[in-house]
Amino acid sequence: MTASTAPIAVGAALPLPASRATSGLVLAVGSALAFSSSGPFVKPLLEAGWSIGAALLIRMTVAGLLLAPALVSAVLHQRGLIRRHGPLILAFGLSAVAGCQLFYFAAMQRMPVAVALLIQYLAPVLVVGFVWLRTRRAPSRLVVCGAVVAVTGLVLVVDIAGARFDLWGTVLALCAAVCTAVYFVIGERAGDDLPPLALAAGGLIVGAALMGLLCATGILPFTAPPVDVTLGGMTLPAIVPMLWVGAVATTVGYALGVMAVPRIGSRMASFAGLAEVLFALAFAWLLLGETPAPIQFAGGALILVGVVLVRLDSNAGGRSAPERATLPVVPSP
Image (cartoon, rainbow, N blue to C red; front, side, top):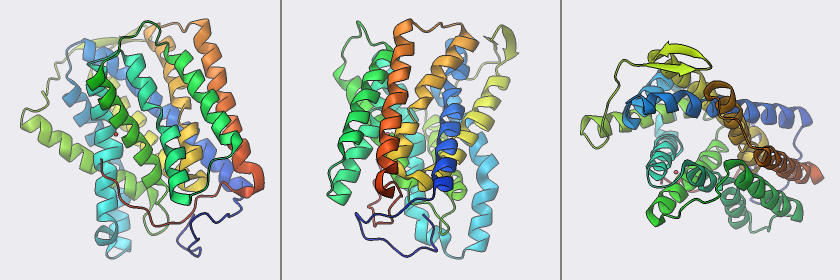
C-alpha cells in the first residue's frame, strides 16, 4: 500500500505481490521477537524495586530518541506532514504506545499476568471484527477457524488454570486489547505520505511525553534504584537491561511492526503478532529459568496453526492486500 497507487474502494480486492507479503510477514515476526524480550528483561528490575513508571518512561524515551531522525527527515522533506497526520500520530502515541502498556500493567496489578496477557492478545479477534464492520464483509471460514484455533492455543500457552476473576482488571485488560488493535489499524495507514518510521517515532515521543507528565505529577511513581539483576546466569547493572529494552525491544519492535502492517494488512499482522507470546516464553526460559510445561508447547503449536489458516485465507484470491480506506482516528490499549 503506497501513496502512488490509486485509492481503492472499501471492500475491493487487490492482488498482493508474493515478495511484499513475504517481507511483511518476516518483519511482523521480527517485531514480535523484539517486543517479546521486554518482559523477561524488565521483570527482574520491577522485582528489584524499579517502578513501572520509570521503566516505561526510559524505554519510550530511548526508543523515541533513536527513531527521531526518521520523523525529522520526513518533516523536512514533506511540507505540512504534521498538519496532515498530526492527529494520527497523536492517536498512535496515546493508544498504541502509552495506552497499551499502561492498561496492561494496571491490569497486571489486579489479576494474574497470564489472564491479563490472554485478554490483551484478543486483539486479532477485535481486528477481524473491525474489518468486518468496515468492509461489511463477513470473515471467511478459514479466518474464523484460524481465530478459534489461535485463541485456544493462547489459552494453553498462558496457562490460566486456577486464575481468579477481577472485574476492574478485566476492563483494564480489554482496554489494552483495544489499544493493541488500534496499533494494527493505525499502522495500516502508513505509506509514502506518512513514512512508517516517522509514525513510530512520533508515537513514541508522544508516549514518552505523556509518561513524563504522569511521573512528574506523581500520578505514576518514578523509582529507579541502582541495582544489579541476574539474567541468564549473569549479574548485570540495571542500566544494561533497560538499554536493551529501549534500544532493541522497543525501537526495533515498533520500527519493524509499523513497516510490516502496510505490507500484509492489519488482520494478518495482528495474528502474526501472537508469535510474541511464544518468543516471550522462550526468553523467560533462557533468561529467567522458567521452564514451559508440555501443554504450553501444544498451545504454541495451535497458535502457529491458527496463523497459517489466516495466511491461507490471505493467499486465496489475493485478497490479503491492505485496502486504502478512510478510517476514523480512534484515540483510546
